[in-house]
Image 1: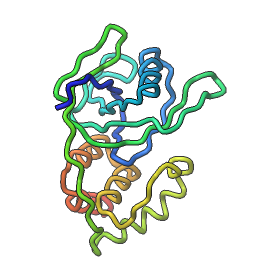
Image 2: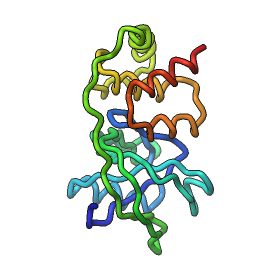
Image 3: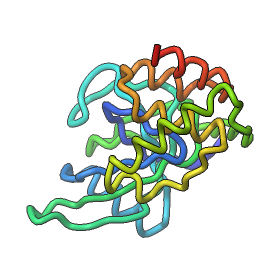
Length: 189
């Protein structure tokens, strides 16, 4: 278990390892958090909100993804824009809310999935991704493409298919990339 306290960013989205998360930062608690993350450098945890809001108190799921800032800019309106990449999954052991509203927590990293070749029965899913990802514009520029890896294909499909947030979260929590692909394939039928 990590002993340090990890800053948490509750959102109404699910971030997957290798996924791209563009954010506009305007709340002081997150401006400060992003500043610290860029200086140290430190990752922050992204967790799906199950109750509450992004701008107030929130209750989250227990499994999320650590995010690393890979790009930033200042928008014309003066707001900070960042691009974060999902890194490793984690389980939230406990969390607290600081007086400034920032959530912090103690996390336990979850094992990374081993690279696994994409089975023949799911190759059509990689073909589908090859058609869809270029149409997503700037989102795709930060992706490390690997259409032969079952984990990568499953994570990217879970991001782009029209799934509920709950279904996306269930895909994040799955430890078997082939079971994830089976589930995603069934959602297309």
